[in-house]
Length: 117
Image 1 (spheres, rainbow, N blue to C red):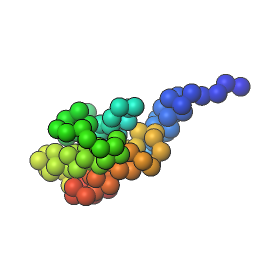
Image 2: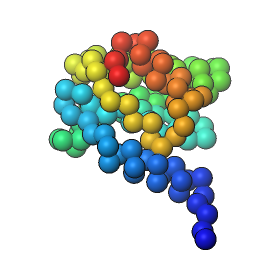
Image 3: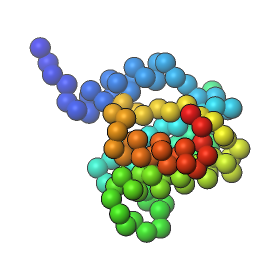
Image 4: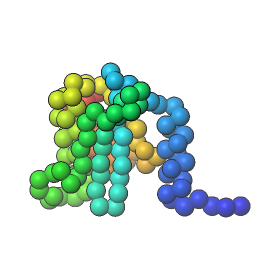
């Protein structure tokens, strides 16, 4: 019996979720990638294979505060970029990560910025 590493388990969860959701031009997929140092998010139209908007912790000016606070700022920045791209609603793809901590903070920040999902 083989056991999965944390990364393998996350990728397995991500593949399972990706089989169920897909982004369209009207309602793109909000993809989250979380690293040890920061967090990134994109709005992806899977039908056309295009990224409509993106935001990441590296694009934030001041990197003060905790990683959770940075994730909330990334969510707000993504919402601003989404409005410029003409996107108001999206489908949330947590990328196999558990919905708490930084992933939840990013989602809440995007909702504060005006994205609906």
